[in-house]
Image 1 (tube, rainbow, N blue to C red):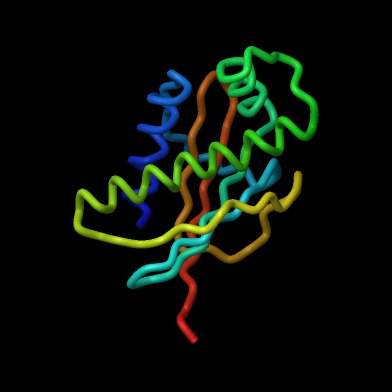
Image 2 (image 1 turned 120 degrees about the vertical axis):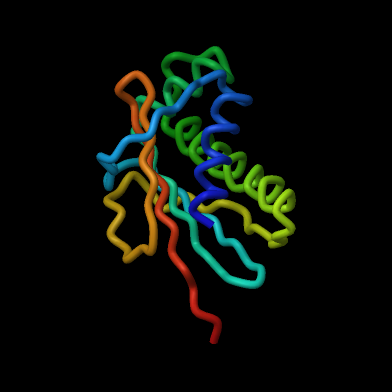
Length: 139
């Protein structure tokens, strides 16, 4: 799942925002956090944490608004989460992996403090985001 999410991040930011992300080993733990669930042969929760600056940059590119209000920042965090994980379905399908995704939920401007199986960090112009991948055991 990690490779699929990583490919999806690079592609979605490039194709949607024209932003070339770079890998960053320095994960962020505090920021605008959205959660989305993946349900297929295996189940995962994906948490994406954005620094405000990256969401402001996305607002400027997508909405031509360089001073977005809090509601816009939250909506962009959810939208970018949906774009990344939605594209991951396409990437996975190319590898004959099928799954469903939930609607993203905004968890707040908070510290990410959950256990995770894998994480990815990205940076562009000193603005970062991180993705945390958590396996969910079937009951």
